[in-house]
Image (cartoon, rainbow, N blue to C red; front, top):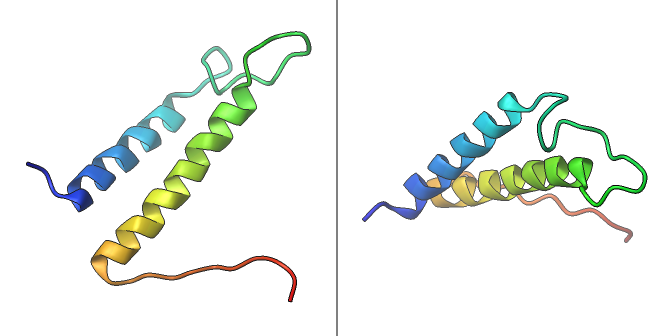
Length: 73
């Protein structure tokens, strides 16, 4: 059975590959068009958000965690 770290790194690689393969003709690479149900920009942004979460989890598992807090004080 693969470790949590290995699973996270595998998913991270898959997302990098998917982002690199995006083009103006593929899902995520197109702009959003009025009247269409596909949210290409949202899909691409969700991949970036997932990468950020994965990076944070990897940092925690490898002992180099950092927490960024945004908001008003």
